[in-house]
Image (tube, rainbow, N blue to C red; front, side, top):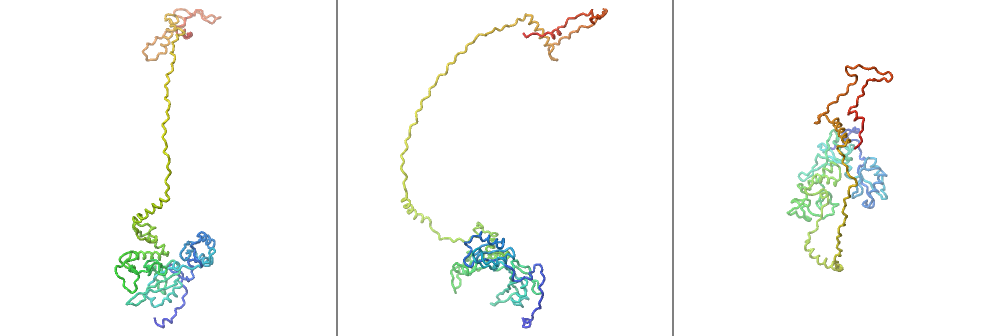
Length: 432
C-alpha cells in the first residue's frame, strides 16, 4: 500500500439500513447474554442453591439457566433488561460479588475470505465492520519457506451469540462461515480439553515417556490418550478426531466443552460401555495384589483374634422322654332289648254286602245306566238304543174331548208313567 493511499480518508457514509442476515448499527455495548457471578472472598460451593434461586427471582425475575462452575455462577439471562439488572448487582445474599461477561459464550466467531482485504490492516477492517457487530479481526498466517505469510482468510468475532450469514465489506457481500478451532491440547500432560496453566498432572513428552529436554524421542512411541503406536500430536489418533467433532458441536451450538463432549459420546458410543461410564473420569487402578497369599497370611490372625472373644454355648441337660399315658379300654355295651310287637284283633268286623239284596240290584242297574251315558264315542262298548218317547195327544181314531172350563184341563188326558231315566233323575240314591 502506497503512502498516498494511506493518507486518503474514505468519505463518511451514513449507516446502511437493516437487511436480512446482516448485522448493522450494533455497537459493542450490547448486553451480554451469559454472565459470571463471582464472590470476592470464597466461592458458592457451600451455599444453599434454593436461597440463591429465590434471591435471584426476587431481584430480576426468572432467569433462563443457572449453573455452578469453578469460578462462581454461570447465569444465562432471558432478556437484555435482565442482563443489565444482574450486571448492576453488588451483593448476592450476604456476599459481595463481581459480575462479568463470559469470555466465549457471548460471542460468535466466523470466517471470511477476501483477497482484497490484504491491502488493509486488521485495525482498519475492525473500524469499518464495527457497526455490524464485529469486535475483533484476526488474519490467518501460514508458513512458507520458514517464514509467516498472510492469507486472505480472516476470523471475525461478533458480539452476539448467533452468527450472521454475511457481512458487507466495502462493495463486497462476504459469506460468513462457522469458525471451528483446533482441539485444545495440554503441553504438560498431552491431554485434550484443558491448558497447561490449569493442569495438575505430571509433565511428559509427546512420545509417552518422561520429559527429556534436548534429546530426540526414541522408539517405541506410545500415545498417552489412545495407547496407540503414534505420538500425542498425531492427527490420525482417534481421540484427536473425537476432539475435532467436539469442537465442531461446541462452535455450532455455542455450548460449553463439557456439554459438547456428552453429545459426541452419545452419538458415538463405544462397544460394551454405558453412557455413564463413557462420560465418567478415568479410573486409576491400583497395583495388582495376590489375594491368595494375603488371605493365607490373614487367616491365622483372624482365628486368634476371634478365639479370644469366643464364648462356648452353655451345656443344657438332655430332656427325658416320658412314656405315653395309658388310656382305659372302652367297654362295649349290649344292644337294648326292645319289646316284641303284639297283634291285636280287629275291633270291627268287615261285612260284605249281599249281592242278592234289592238295594244292590238297584245299584247295579243304576251304575250300568250311568256307564252307558258317560261312555266315549268310538269305544268298544255297545251304545244303548234310544228309547221312544211316548206320543202326546190323542190316539188316532178317537175323538178329542172338550176341556173343562173350571179346571182348564183335559178330562180325558191319560197320565203316563215316568220312564226309568226320569225316575233316576228325580231320585237320589243314598250311599251304600
